[in-house]
Image (cartoon, rainbow, N blue to C red):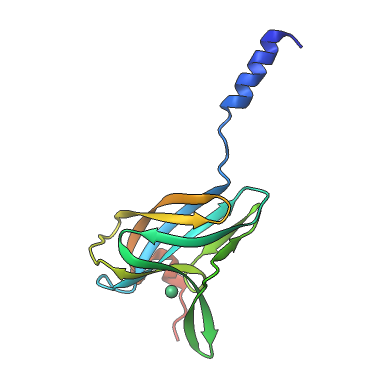
Length: 153
Ligand SMILES: [Cu+2]
C-alpha cells in the first residue's frame, strides 16, 4: 500500500457524512379546531445507533406545555394517558408517533399558529441529548390527510 493510496483512503473515510444516531421524519402538528388551545405532534423517530434511546421531554415556544401521551381505549372511549417516563426508541429501529397512538401533546397553545407554517420543537433524548426539529402545523385535524381513513361510527 503506497502513501498516496493511504492518503486517499483517509480522505474518503473522513469526508463520509456521519449518519446521525437519531433522525426525525415527517414532524407535523394538528389541533382539533383552528382555535384550539391544545394540539398533538406526530413524527417518526429513527434510531440508527446500537443503543436504545428514550424521548424524555419536548419543549416549544408555541405552547405552555408539551407532554408525552399515549392513547388507550377505555371501553368505547379513547383516553389519553400522560407517559411520564417518556417513549423508548428501539436500537436500529423507530418510534412512530401517530393519531390514535403515542403523540406529543401541546397544551396552552398561543393560538397564533398559521396553517402550513413551521415552528421549532426541542426534543430531549436520554442518550443523544437535545435535538431541534421543525414541525409543520397542518391545521385542524380534519385537514390531515392521514385521517381520511378514520373510523366513523
Ligand atoms: Cu394527548
